Length: 396
Ligand code: NAD
Ligand code: MG
Image (cartoon, rainbow, N blue to C red; front, side):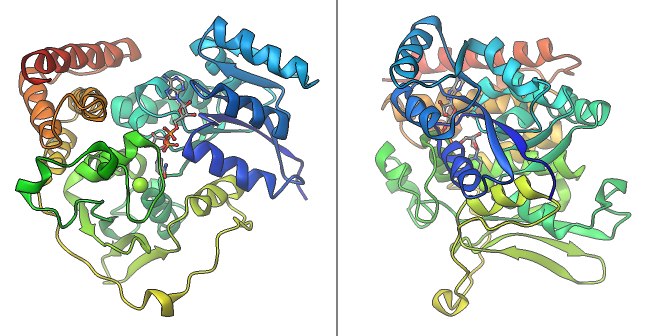
C-alpha cells in the first residue's frame, strides 16, 4: 500500500468540496486533508476543520480569519489560518501536498489552480472556468511542470475513462473520430421559449438529476454549462471543436462517449453522483469505493437521446463560436456569463437575457491573443466592464 496522500481542497464548503471530503473520509488509510478553503460559509468551514483536522484553512480576509481562529482555538483545534488569494496559492503549491482538488467556482479559482499546476501537483480539476479562461497557458503549464491533470467534470472524467492511456499522442492517432458530450438538458429542457421569459432563479437551480452550486445550476439551465464543457473538452483532450458533439440525454446515466473510426463507441455509465468521478480521479490509476450505489439498469429501463435546441438555448451556439475563435473569446464568454448569471440570480435580468448579454459583449470585444496570465485577466476585466455597462442599460 502506498503512503497516505495529502490533499488540499480548494472550495471545500461547496458541493464538489463536500463530496470530495465524503470520499476522503471513507479512506483514512489513503488520504489525509492538508488544507481546506472557504469563502463565505465560515461556520461550515469551522465544522469541516474540526472533522478533518487540516494543517491549514484559508478564508478571504482578516476579519473571517480572526473569526475562524477564535472558533478553532475554542475547540482546541491546531490549524493555521491563512488569508486571501496568497493563502489559496500557498496551500495549492505547498511541498507537503500530493493532490489538489480545484473546486472554487468561477474565475476566482484560476490563480490557485494554476499555482497547483505550476508546482507539478496532481490536480483534480472541477473549476472548468479556469481552463476555459486560460486554456493555452494552462495546458502549457501542465506540460512544463509535469502536473497530472485529472478531470472531475463527470463528462470529461467519462471521456478520460473511455480514451486509451496514450491519447496525448493525438486523438486521430489513437483512432478517435468524435467525442459525444452528453447533457441532461437541465430543468428547462421542455420549457417553451415564451415560458423561459418568466422562469425564476429557484426554478433554474432545481436541477432534475444533479445537486450542485447555484452558478453551475444556472449554467446547466441555460446550457452554458455544456458550452463551457465543450471548450473544456477541446483543451483537455486537444480536440478540434468540430469533433465535439453535444447529445441531450435526459437520464444522465451515460456521462459521455467516445466514437472510434472502427465504429466502436465507448461510454461510461453510472448514477449521477459526483463522488464517482471524484473517487476515480483521487485513486487514479487505481479504483476505490466512492460510496455511490451500484447502477440499477432495470430501474432506469431506458436511455433517451435528443439533439440540442440552439434556438431556445443560444448559449451553446455562443460557446461553440468562442471555441472556434479561440484566443480571448472563451475568457470573454466566461466573464460575461459570470456577470449575467449573478444578475439573473439577483433578479436583475430575465433568463433569456443571459444569452443576449453574453452575445452583445462578445460582439463588442475584439478577439486578441492571450500570451500571459495578465492578458487573460485583462480580457476578463474588460468583458466584465462591458457586461456591467449592458446591465446598467437593460437590467432592473
Ligand atoms: P459551490 O458554489 O457549491 O462551491 C464553490 C466553492 O468555491 C465554495 O467552497 C466557495 O466558498 C468557494 N468560492 C466561491 N467564491 C470564491 C472566491 N471568490 N474565492 C475563493 N473561493 C470561493 O460550487 P460547486 O457546485 O461545488 O462547483 C465548483 C466548481 O466545480 C465549479 O467550477 C463548477 O463548474 C464545477 N463543477 C461542479 C459540479 C457539481 O456537481 N457541483 C460538477 C462539475 C463541475
Ligand atoms: Mg459536467
